[in-house]
Image (cartoon, rainbow, N blue to C red):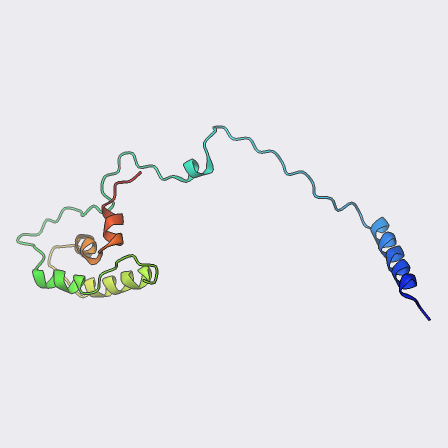
Length: 135
């Protein structure tokens, strides 16, 4: 009959034998990395803002008598993105692209029309974010 103490002694002997056979598993020291400059990671990840003006720049339109009608603005503003946590920005972009891809104007690139209309599809926190000055 085996007792608990005998079983424990046998387990401890097995552990000692396996640890004696295994190589040293201590963690090596991490290499020391030196940076050329002393900027923080947050500073390194900042996008350069010098020389940039507005985030959305509409290219020049060379068409005669082109203007966006009120009905089109109302159509885009029908489903605005407010920037709430429960809203899906990707779904808003898909909807916006679907709406604006149905419109064609002669001698006007569709990207120009989309860039003109996009600010009207935002409201609330999303509009504040768009109008905010870069850091």
